[in-house]
Image (cartoon, rainbow, N blue to C red; front, side, top):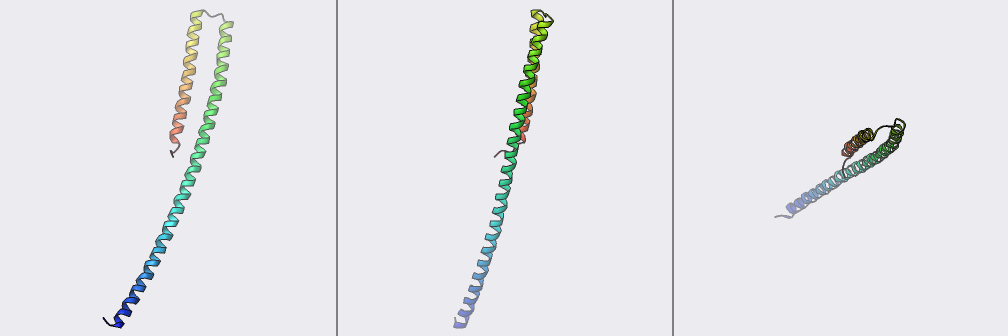
Length: 124
């Protein structure tokens, strides 16, 4: 090989090296942009999940308060009505059973709503 051929090969090798470096920086740039987008997406998903958790907490709190307040009021009025109307013990048992079934049905509906809402929350 002559010196001219070696110089030409060295020039081509240098050109190819520059192309490889440019390609490397382009790949690194694209990768870092993709990483940034993935990180932003993850942060947004965390914010959304946090909002859903807060929403679930307050909905559950409100459902518990409603059930507790109205349940106690219902039982108080039921006991007062039983006392006022002088209902027999069989009638009292039947009325109590119906009231308990009603309260349990209300608890079941609220629990079903909470489970449905918790399924909507994305898992981490």
